[in-house]
Image 1 (cartoon, one colour):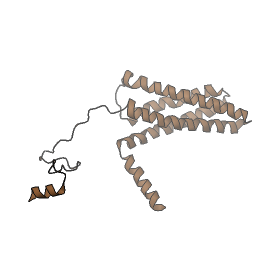
Image 2 (image 1 turned 30 degrees about the vertical axis):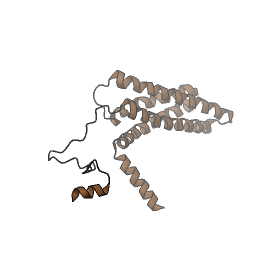
Image 3 (image 1 turned 60 degrees about the horizontal axis):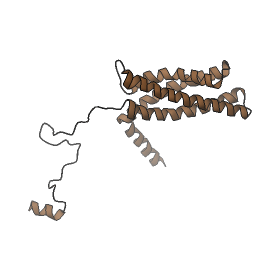
Image 4 (image 1 turned 180 degrees about the vertical axis):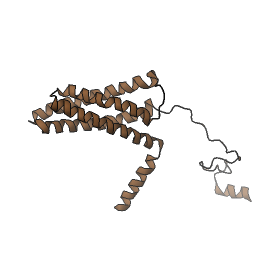
Length: 192
């Protein structure tokens, strides 16, 4: 059992050292900050201020969205002024989609909590848990959209080139010495 756990930990560590892993880790930091701000805002608005579930969810989304935008730019190492058409507007379009999901789930959870007869802290915990689960789902969805679409690296990938010593790049497997022959007997005959 401990051998499996060690293998899983080693696999996770190796994945975290890839570009996707580094960006996912950074985006997770953004998500934790955004979720903390939005969960606190949801509880305050729904419980303390006695706002409706929809208004509370929108306020919670606003609390987390600004943080998410700034930290997402950091996660994908964006510097300088963002391009409004390629970065800012698409980011906020995705964020509005997340807001719609979060608001809908919160309203549904609140209605369901009231139908179950929950009130006070029980209702807040139920609605907060539903909001949290929806936030986790939108987190994964947003990461995939940001990484593979919005912040995707669009620079052309260069082909491997020979090193200055004239030798091929050692990270690539060596080419077959006899590209036209695949039979081992043919290779041995060429060597003799």
